[in-house]
Image (tube, rainbow, N blue to C red; front, top):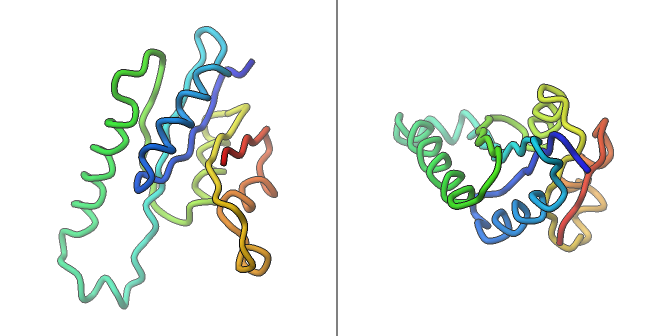
Length: 136
C-alpha cells in the first residue's frame, strides 16, 4: 500500500512505538522503507544554562539506543532517525525530505488543553502533505 512510511515515536512510550511499527509493517509495500523517527525537543536556554554541558549529547545517545531497541528484531527496511526541534515541524519536514506517502503517529485521548494548544498529532494532521494514520 505504501512505499515510504514515517513512524514518529515518543521513546518514553516504547511499547506504543513497537505497536505502531508492527502496524506500519503490515501497510508497507514490498521493497518499501520505514523511517522510525524520534524528535528531541530543544531545552530552553534559560534551563540549559543550569544543566550539565553534555546533557544534549547524553539525551541523543540514549534516544538512539531506545530507537534501536524499538526496531530490534523487526524484519524489513527500517531506518532510524533522530531530529531536534519542535516535534510536529520535524515530523513534517522528515516526511517531505523522504517523500513519504504515510505518516504514522500515536495520540492520546484529547483533553481540553488540546482544543486551545493542539497536540503534536493534531498539528501533523492539519499540515501534512501526505496521508496520516493516528493510532490510539
